Length: 154
Image (cartoon, rainbow, N blue to C red; front, side, top):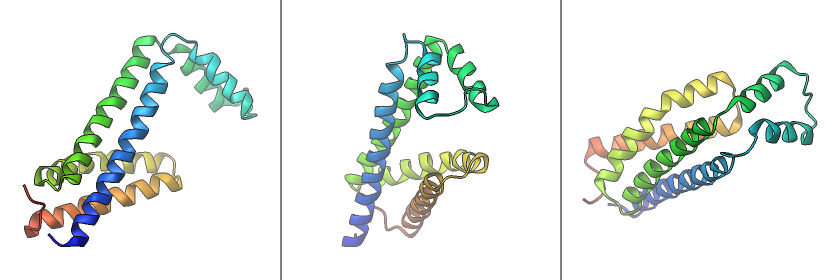
């Protein structure tokens, strides 16, 4: 394995660790909402950001937030932790330069690409474009490594 390959795999691993950390933080924040009135919290943020509470979209968000049950909130937090565990697994395999890390990253990241494209189609943001580009480049690079036999040591 060339030195630059090792650095690139570790850079991808760091990106996966970052994604996991963000999901863990988000999930923990979501779990804190379980026994609180989410509608009131969202309404507070609508007022703090000086959004028009009479706006149709803002009203829909407020209504949906106020109808969330504790079980639904727990499920959202749990899904976030499951994805974080996947990202931690990918990152660990890549950091340790393991072949299975490359395979898991291709499978997991590749399977999430259609969802990322759909989300981008719904609403384009610079962050969504950046994440999609990074993930496509990651999958392409790892598939190239796997196909050419230049994979990490097992």
